[in-house]
Image (tube, rainbow, N blue to C red):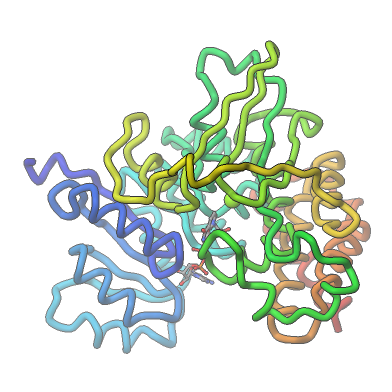
Length: 389
Ligand code: NAD
Ligand code: MG
């Protein structure tokens, strides 16, 4: 096709698990012939970043880590690819002239760049669920005002998005998020108490980044996804259900007022959701595993246990309280997660910290601007760090 018809894309967080899968999908769907990569961004891993940029012919590469700028320049020498570093360079890259932006930076660090892309009017393929958990409706409004589309990449939300019939949105009764249950699905609290990050990160079905892997073990990831669903699909908290489904074949479901339930199924491979977000509203052929139903033989379901996985209870609390409680829960847990990975906090204490910080900050009024969100995020981090000591 004509070079002018290529879709301009940017990948924020290209060196991560979602980022590398996105580049693979782009390659499968035609690579440079079909896509012009405006910018790739990463953090410390500048060698991979540079290799990715050479491979896909990116125009600009940004590392958030200023101390790695010289290494990034070195790794790109002779390529003609522009390099930049630091926070403001990251924001500039995010607000470049891409038509489609994959938001795959992990954690709250992804919020400001994703917002910048949304305000510019790019279609946002949203992997970074923290954006919606922290900024909620303000983030949805920013995308709407920018004029781009918000397309979920999280497998559960992609499934719901696919199973939502546009003209039947008024007839949605509930959405059912499936959860694998993680590596500790059958463990007691006593067993979980002493686990290390190395044990907790080993997910039975999905291969993912560190934070989301730990979040799957604590089910904090599902807690974030409940809040993400609220804002994406504009449903009431009582319309959001979670069911444990250990095989991770049904990626989530939509229940309608007539009793019908529509589900989306597939192999546990994020490239299907990424490809859908890239080619929406159409579908393109992808080389991913196909389900072999005769081999599957069974799909299991069980109710989640909020005593062993209190993160789910915290999400309900955050949803009921509304306002900035999502931002506070998310920030506190992010601090607790880093403390757990650093060996300074026990596995079960992550939820305790998040709960205490949420309870301490109930007085914060609902956010009227993004500044309020960033301020609440900072305050929650400060309180969490104080509690951890
Ligand atoms: P990851 O840790 O593998 O990758 C994170 C990316 O963000 C990397 O490119 C890293 O360089 C970059 N990054 C990290 N800290 C940064 C900072 N301070 N500033 C700028 N860039 C920074 O994470 P992942 O598993 O790919 O997850 C990315 C996002 O997608 C998360 O929000 C996660 O919840 C969500 N998500 C991931 C999966 C999955 O299968 N991995 C599934 C659903 C949703
Ligand atoms: Mg998910």
